[in-house]
Length: 182
Length: 322
Image (cartoon, rainbow over all chains, first blue to last red; front, side):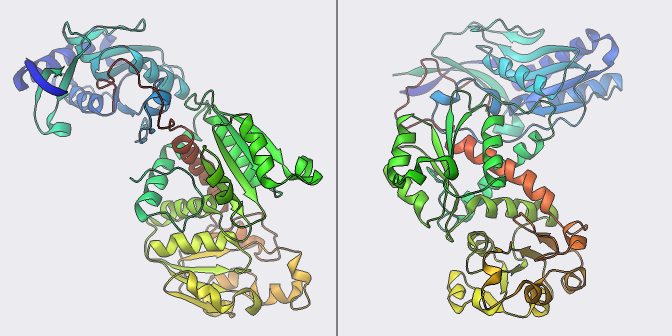
């Protein structure tokens, strides 16, 4: 079984443009950033949320707070995957009550990660609203979860994997579609 | 990190494993401040909490840790158990096992009991204290408290005060802290600090003089005095207090920012005076919170990990957030 790159979905430049566009969309659809906060899901969601916060500060002067969510304790697949994933900890140092939250992740797939993320957030308080921002929506939802802010929607098959590679986490900047070949 | 199947003691843990456990306890420390202290991560799992020796604090700590992770517990307590009717340890444990718990937390008055059980069962065993052998979760929560209060675990001057001979807490702490470069001083009445203790770790010294033991200490671990022993012909309570009580005056001989730890329960006025117990240098309350965090981290990893032959899901989880 090998992993073969099928095609590139986003180049470095396209990632940058997409994030800038998403940052603008978030502000436009958030009645001026009042109570707004971004929550990045470890690990790449955190990098993306961080970039979104910086972009927002760049064009609007708004300082949107950002939190980090570790969903390991809320996943539903743990009893089937063997050893427990290491915990890296949630770091949300502002109260979640009444906040307008935008959860940020790299890829939206089955929706289970987002279900876990919502469980995690609701353990901390009662947000006023929770919306989702993803770089890639690859379809194949197994739960009724949707993203409000989508970088790019891509049709994929079950054997394919969408790999988001970011400078901070992976040392390069591109999004590729890979396939597993026997 | 090398996978852990049981937690039987500190002696066989590596530096890396200990650091891992303490790092994993950190999110659970945060968790104790959440408004809703209930996770579903161990939902459907059952933890047998088998205490063959009386305990309130450790038992409640483990039971609460399991409950907060979403697990159910089966409680076995010595006084009400079939042990009193003469059932052997292994039969009691086999009975528990037949009810299919996902792990066992065991406290027993015989050193080696947890290992005995671990060799015979297929499920993770956590040692909550065995005889005079080890109390690993106590040493781990003490280390976490030291790390939080003093910024690191490595290379401190540690004084352990009291009945070292009969203390599993002392042994586990000696193993752990010496793996992190501590210079350890053992202090107590002569019959409780015999020469054989020096074999437990390098860089260990013994003294019967409290003032000498406390000079320059960065961490002072005060042991509980088992009152049954205090009436032995060799030592009366007043003598112990005079020679070995940690008073505010004695504590001033230690470093000004020395941390005072006590595994509890404290007997105020015996091994420790109230001023010290309630003073700014005391870490006893944090020890309790940290105990919960450490036990949650251990249960999460040991009980949560699936057995080796668990089926894998059909769909690849590579896009699951890591």
